Amino acid sequence: MSGWGVLIGLLRRRTASIAFIPQIDGLRFYAVVAVLVFHCCGYLSTPARNPAATAAAATWFAGLAKAGHSGVELFFVISGLVLGLPFARAAAGVGPPVSLRRYFLRRVTRLEPPYIINLLVLSTVILLLGRETLSWLVPHLLASLAYCHNLVFGRASSINFVAWSLEIEVQFYILAPLLAGLFALRSPWARSTALGAGMALGSTLACCLTMTAGVPPRYALTLACYLQYFLMGFALADWHARGGDRSERSGRADVLAIPCAAAVPLLEHHPALRAYLLPLAFGGLCLSALHGRLHSRLMSVPALVVIGGMCYTIYLYHPFIKSACGPAIVRLAPAGLPAVATLVAQVVAFIVVIVGCCVPLFLCFEKPFMAVGHRQASRQEPA
Image (cartoon, rainbow, N blue to C red):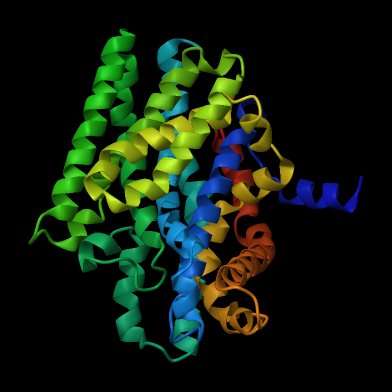
């Protein structure tokens, strides 16, 4: 086996193999790279950090990168698909009943240890660098560990700000078994109508909570603002469980990815439309990745699948790797290059460094707990 093959095998996530869908990790690759591009461009467009920030911020690439924060919402759609599929299969009679004990135990054994380690490591670094006192740190750490920092403090975690989305994910994990009752509706029309109504309600709540003056920010950092994305994942799970997985791959599904991907940056300028249409765009993108003739092959490329499989570690640690290596990457900018070429090269360098640094972190702090989670998983649960 080649050295590349050994590396791929070492980094491949341990999953319930019978239910492994490589395209899901390919979609996770899309989501995590979008978030990396967004944050790295933001770093490079800050004058205090980068003397060429004004020129960088004026490029078309920087404008496109601003839509990268939508990668978080794509993660929410993927979560809805992954968590909903076992329930949808059970309701369709093509899978075993879902054990709630095993469902919640898998969430705890698979996701909690890497998250706790991350918070403890970062808290230790904050104290060692003298950035905050222990008395300040403890309340924020406890709230973050309990997934309630958004609600208690009205803002993202002061220890690891990207944890704001994980707190929303946990809210959905708890409610998902209850929401899965929608799969029990026998009529396809009834299921589609219920899921569509739920998505419309979520989009409306998102508009009300984010666009109404005087609403406290903490309410915008709850599941109420993002329910539509998880329910889109549920809709994909329902379609997949009831025969969509047996659909032939087609070029039409490949073409579907083009308008769906183009809609993401276009909707940035229309917040209300974004709340209603972005879940649909991501639903189309996921369908294309799962059932496009060429797109599904692209999403199965081993390198993309492996990086997508590391997304949890990359997401948790990338802000701090970015801050540590940022000054060096800013200095790497060669003179004479157009601003857009310099910005693209620096963002690519950021991503390479971040992914490289996350390899040992993934092997030490995440993959070992996959073995535990694997033993708890239903063999019908996708990765």
